[in-house]
Amino acid sequence: MQIKEIIVVEGKDDTTAIQRAVQADTIETNGSAISAETLKRIQHAQEKRGVIVFTDPDYPGRRIRAIIEEHVQGVKHAFLPKAKTIAKNGKGLGIEHAADKDIREALQHVYTPNYEVPNQDDITLEDLMTARLIGHAQAKQRRERLGDILNIGATNGKQLHKRLKMFQITEQQFGAAVAQLDQEEDHA
Image (cartoon, rainbow, N blue to C red; front, top):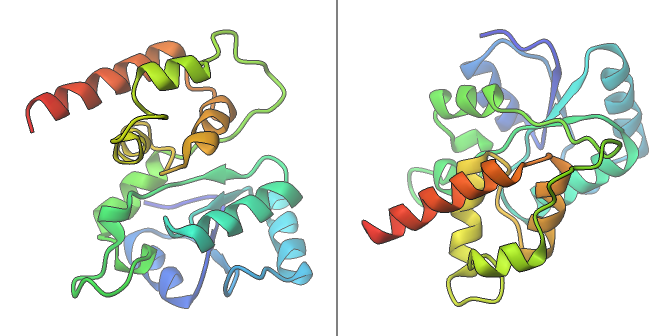
């Protein structure tokens, strides 16, 4: 599998894992304090070939994603659930620990945020409450699983609402994902 876009990762171990799974070029941020020079390289890459941001499913990874999104318009996003990025020894989390097939699958489900086209069928905060994704004892676990189902990554309650809009998740997609979530819980 060859990837046209340049993939932005956190470090050299992530690059190794990506190149083990697919044919792709990467840019490494080398941590969550992204330099102005690195942001320029990412902007240039976006203009020439496009960029896929593929960071770890943790706070530093989300921070890197937000910084890039703020400075470089139109980047795509790939996500992996936490469970698929845990080291075999259980001591570490990151893209570098993911299986090749999981990396390929994540790269097949990239999202491009579209801020310009308003989503006609917005999912409301009330919808999130009804679906027990905010304001409920199991909300965090349900949001994490919903993020896996929709391939939009794990979020907190505020981020979930923003990310559903950003990736233009329709009411139908949301409803189907919540139904799957409810069905999984009923059979657990």
